[in-house]
Image 1 (tube, one colour):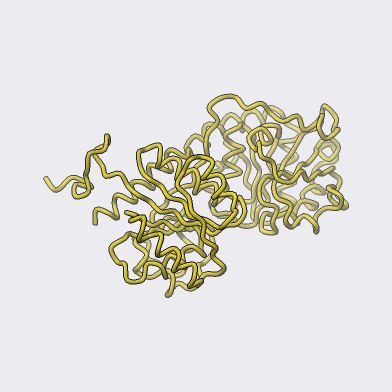
Image 2 (cartoon, one colour):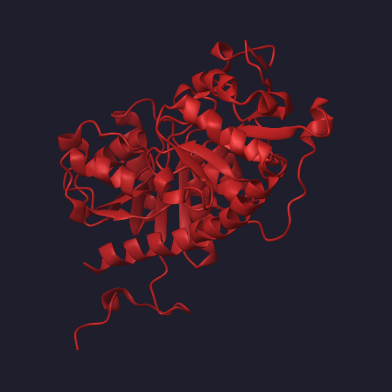
Length: 377
């Protein structure tokens, strides 16, 4: 029999495996899906007995939330991919803290960490990639100094392989969400926004940026049946970036469906639970954690069949998928859900079950396994 896995790095922890010091690096200055994943991973690793250290941008929501959760944190301003001053500061932190693993979670921190690790070959360097686009600067950033890549979906992995990165260097670990432990009280959007009691509340959740498909909302609303147009209401939940082109005074221009933008919402689970249907017209998606959040709360999603969404939504089982960019098909799918409460219930029940496969605890275990594997050889 050969050596047991991770035999060379065993120590006296309860699980028989070395307690790891993992330095997490993220340059994001806002609170989006990537930053949320960093925090969930760090908390999950701490729960498993490890020592995570989160380094982010000064005054970033990630740093504030990690500090509030009692995690070890520090801040380094990263002004660009090749910020030499940031790399020097990061290098000093690495040397002082003696990390077992360095894990970069976005493109800028990836580049800064590469510079900080010059001359240090022994520390494993893990890079997570979250977007389904062909990476840039492959020869400079994706060389052999990166010990292992983590792609959050097959779609992201395939884009990396298309750029010339060997599949053998990439592990797929789906992003995870914190599944609700109990029933979440839904936010009363109808009464709050003055909508009729019999209206069907549809919602778009996430960063309100161009790639999230805001420009498609009018065309989707126009493609609804006349009955669906009468009863549907649409609420935009998330940051307001990019909304100017799609709305005026919080109401969408020239749309047959009344639309309100409510901006960033702290109690996001309650806000999503108050929806009847999730619209996700994103043009590209690494995985789609806002979709998983909705599914975990029993809210059936409609989405374009792009990127990692194909790995999340089972068409006509746990949600509805339509051809990329086909707003007429999206409108027809939305009409089905708006007009058919039995369909909403059936898809919503299956969506809960499907979302349970994307638990943050499972994501933590799989990434922990990647760490141990690279440390083992």
